[in-house]
Every structure is written in C-alpha cells, then in structure tokens.
Length: 195
Image 1 (cartoon, rainbow, N blue to C red):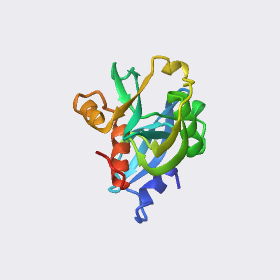
Image 2 (cartoon, rainbow, N blue to C red):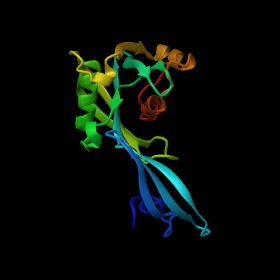
Image 3 (cartoon, rainbow, N blue to C red):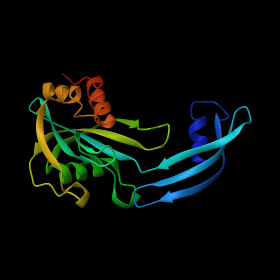
C-alpha cells in the first residue's frame, strides 16, 4: 500500500477514496518534488492528481513579555513583505527531529535560544496539493543572541510585537501566513492567553 493509500485508509475505511495507479516526477529541486499521479476514484473513474512533496517544517512561537518575536521578509511568490513566526525546514529535504529543528530555526532567524520549548501541535498545510505538515512549538525563557540567517533570509527583519499589534498586523494584511495564524489559534486553544 502506498503512503497516499495509507493516508486515505487512516480514518478506518478499508478502501481509500482515491488510489494511486502510477506516478511520475515532473519537477525536482533541493526544496521540493512535484509529481503527477494517475489515480482511481471509488466509482472506478480515473484521473490525475498533482502533488507537491516537501518535507515537514517547524514553526516557533517565541513569546516574551505578553507578546511575540516575529520576523518579516520579502516573500517572492506573493511579491511583498509580510510578518510571520520563525519557521523552516532542514536544507536539502533532510529529515531532522522537530525539536532540534525548532531550536535551530529560532536561533538562525532571531538569535534567540529558548530555555523552554514545548510542542503544542501538528498541522497540515495546503493539504489539497501537498502532504507537507508542520510541528508548532511554544518558546519561552528566551536568551538573546545574534541571528545566523541563510542567504535567502538576508533581507529578514525581526522585532517584538504585542498581542494587540499582532491582531492589527492581521487586520492590515501584513500577516497573511496561514501557518502563523494557525499556530496562534493553537496557542489560544492550548489554554494560554491569546489576546
């Protein structure tokens, strides 16, 4: 059984709603693989499904003094700068233990190290086109340091925002990252004050 079939059958059904018949890679680079699958649906009809395979990533919510440390950078696909929580995947599509990766991403993007790093959930993103997901961590007891950003992050800025300012940035369209908003919701559902 393929990984796609296993996911389809994970909810207790014996037969997945969509079954992969064949697959071919149509594009690949160090960050992703794009494939086209020939599939068969429950009624026997066939079709194709485009899938973007990317490794899971981590997102860190660094909280301090009633607010959050956030990063802002130019996002090429949308053509503008936006704010988000620090996040990322291991280079070269490598698999790294999530807590280790979270500590690395937090330090790289903000310079902070976390005295306490707590996992608060796992979510999927763009689940209509990709199996990629992300683990969300809440970081507290922060110690400042110097960021060590990758070349792609050379324009990145970082600063602290209050919870009220976080909501204002969302309202103004300056936070549009779905992963950041989902992490904020997880934090609220975790029983921690979210505003």
